[in-house]
Length: 220
Image (cartoon, rainbow, N blue to C red):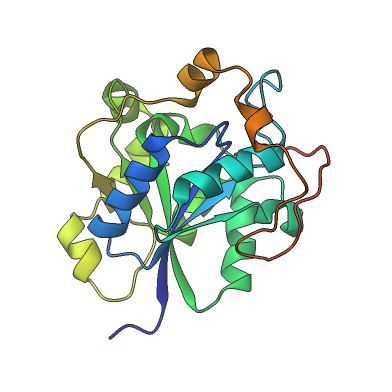
């Protein structure tokens, strides 16, 4: 019997949250035998254009509504932590929640550009990484500098789940039927979606603090 809660971390802009986020999270919950998945709604990614980026509170509310009663906890904790880069956010989470084991959930598209993230090797040494296969990105992933370094740390899913204490670096690949839904397509079809999620500042499901409106950015 393990004493540490096993938490999957899925970061993103959630602009808006959609069924693909929920589906991949439920799959990861079952495949990795996680206790919860935390959706970390980014204040804003400077690598993505600000145009078309809805307010954090609206993106957060869309995630809460979509998560529903699943074992998914929605948080904008980066605002409270004051971190700008993913590597700093993950280090702060490990310090704040020492009784949790974390695994970073990453789409194959992000792994293809993982070598561009600040201190990406430190991220890999900090916690295991589970890569969710995504159609059209296999070639970029195989050829990426990050994969060239991470390939030696590939772990079969069964060994990862049943291996007792998690260690890092470790890379496990999750493959399931691709989900074609995207936030870009949703925004094109419904450019005013964020207006449905307007309202007073929501309360963070993890920190229980109000998410007040202010301008911020977070980088990979």
